[in-house]
Length: 286
Ligand SMILES: *[C@@H]1O[C@H](CO)[C@@H](O)[C@H](O)[C@H]1NC(C)=O
Ligand SMILES: *[C@@H]1O[C@H](CO)[C@@H](O)[C@H](O)[C@H]1NC(C)=O
Image (spheres, rainbow, N blue to C red):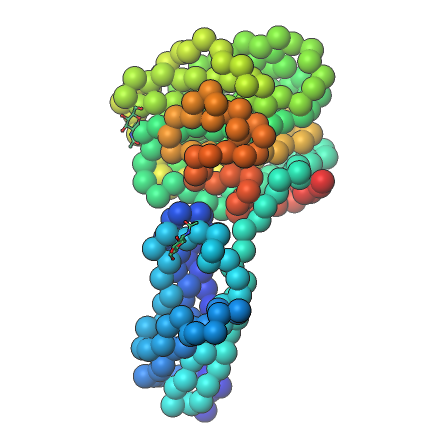
């Protein structure tokens, strides 16, 4: 007979704070019925026992971090699986993109749960590139430039929503890292832009638009199609850090808090819980 084996899977694979999370105990080699026992390391009581293979966190938070075990008992015996539920805290770290490529990038493994009517994006970058380059590329299947933060030249930032863009001109020749935030509100179309915590005059675009929730989110390359279509001539070379995205409009004080990596609004994803996958030549460094 086939051996009873068991494995724990998380849905979504990268948990987001204050969102739903499921841990699921996947059994093979036993047609059932089975009993599942869920335990957490350090907890003296079992969390759950019964026929359900799923452990449900309605709103995942820091108190849920830890090591979980699922013990399954069926007609073919007993098997155990363990799972480490963690948050990747990147504070004091940066992604280094050491050279121009058309492949290297960071994939952000999180998405908003629903279409966005308000959003704010913040990040810090450090580069001496003078050619156009992409910092943050959020594509949906319908629109490759659904949300895009792009630098066409050292003295400008372009912020795109749903394929349309506004440009903010900044003083050139700074030779420093730059912290930027950009926000957008569907009800008015108003875009706000902050450089190093200072607000630029407001502009607007895409009033009434909804930003799609099913997204491929990429740092360091510009997507011309969902999850791909990169161009080395628009790739990023240098350092990116403190990346945050919220489903709301941040205030000026919220922007300053994000600059310090101590945001008080819960982001969709942020530097203290950054679910990512580095693809190709990208390094996470202190
Ligand atoms: C975390 O979630 C638990 C419920 O699972 C709740 O009792 C607790 O208050 C929450 N903690 C925080 C810090 O939100
Ligand atoms: C978006 O922001 C507007 C104005 O700040 C607010 O009235 C609205 O409820 C927000 N929408 C969502 C879905 O959060």
